[in-house]
Amino acid sequence: MAGLSLRHIYKRYNTKKRFNLINFIKHKGKPPKTDKEFVAVKDFSMEIEDGEFIVFVGPSGCGKSTTLRMIAGLEEISDGAMYIGDTFVNDVDPKNRDIAMVFQSYALYPHMTAFQNIAFGLKMKKVPGTKTDKNGNVKNVMRHLTKEEIKDKVRWAAEVLNIEEQLNKKPGEMSGGQRQRIALGRAIVRNPKVFLLDEPLSNLDAKLRANMRAEIVKLHNKLKTTFIYVTHDQVEAMTMGTRIVVMKLGVIQQIDTPTNLFDYPANKFVAGFIGTPQMNFFDVTIRKNGSVLETIFEDGQAVNYKLDSLRKIDVKYLDGEIHKVILGIRGEKIFVSDDGLKTSLTIKEVLGDTTQLFLHFTEDSKDFIVCVSERADYNSGDAVRVKFSEKNIHMFDAETEVSIMGREIGNK
Ligand SMILES: Nc1ncnc2c1ncn2[C@@H]1O[C@H](COP(=O)(O)OP(=O)(O)OP(=O)(O)O)[C@@H](O)[C@H]1O
Ligand SMILES: [Mg+2]
Image (cartoon, rainbow, N blue to C red):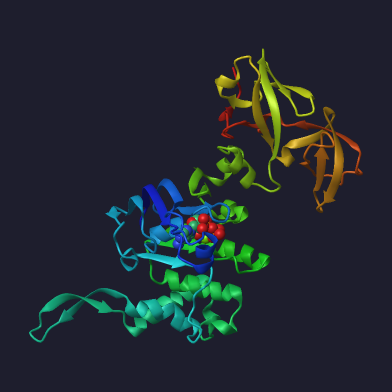
């Protein structure tokens, strides 16, 4: 078991244009364009405590797998320093890093049974042992595991993962979820310091995913080893991680607990990425006027929010001048109220116990979503008036899209 320290890690790929005939003709025989560098991971810094369950999340191509592969040693680190426990590992071979990785494709051997697949890595493994020579002297040596020891470990893994009945089957005779467990079994018998999992559930159907998600969390609770889990599914991230790293274009956007990410997103990207339905955003202007914040929406409607009830706003925006900001609010934090903002209903979606109202201010403005718990009796085109829960309002700078609010409520 060990923690990890990633210090200013970069991954640069050289995306050199290869010679090919089409390009050669297209560029009229001139040499291909100069070498280009693509930075897949930029200045990634993070301290991971022993036993944490960390999730890397972000859209496709944001550098999640690249970071994980650098931790595993499968990808060279271009810049920065990586430690597993106290050991500097930049130059340490993958097999000597004491890490187990589970991939999206289970990568099982099809001709071997589940038992043989799980046992495979153990046959190579050496452990400290002793040997008695002919003079009766006992020496310390590295030895292979005995058949019995291997059997015990595989049985233990099978029990933990609830696959005791599957051990004699070959991968072809198993369901996706069972295969995934075999792949996990192969990783856990090695008793690694760190588990790396790269989208291990993406081949499974929705129900099985939810089951396996819970299984992996249980497994983490049992083993208490450091887990790093990659996904682009924010629900997986929110339900599994003790801390989540949100990435975009190779750059960390925020590292935080699931609830903090939800309640206090550091920027508009995180706010929009975490939570379903997506947070609603409005271009507004704000101006402090005594104890209220005059907020004017796109269509000219104005609301005075009590500064006392809003989360703390950077004082720079409270100088009495007009500032352009992005106001964010989740659909569950908007409610229908007779003296609220005037909007019209585009459509409604009844989802069983909740109804989503798609509303717009003007014909040209984008829809925003309000979640109501009752079977709201509205029709397209109806006027609906809504109010925002003041303490759940988020604000972001219009240019940088960075949050301008602190975590506590109340402005002086
Ligand atoms: N060998 C390579 N050469 C050049 N660019 C690469 C190479 N491998 C990955 N990249 C680029 O690095 C970026 C990050 O890739 P990475 O595989 O880490 O993304 P990801 O976040 O895991 O995405 P996904 O969710 O699709 O798996 C991508 O833009 C990708 O095109
Ligand atoms: Mg990936």
